[in-house]
Length: 57
Image (tube, rainbow, N blue to C red; front, side, top):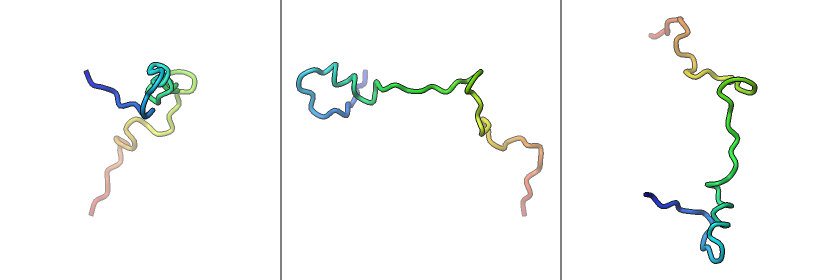
């Protein structure tokens, strides 16, 4: 098991309280894969497979 290196410096009184305010347990906003709010401007694979040949010299 690996140990987590917290960013709260030296913890004195309440270790659980200090870890709860650490970036490890911050709230994260998850992007929807499907449905409302799931539109992605850039495609998954960029411009791959456009059907046009690449011009090389």
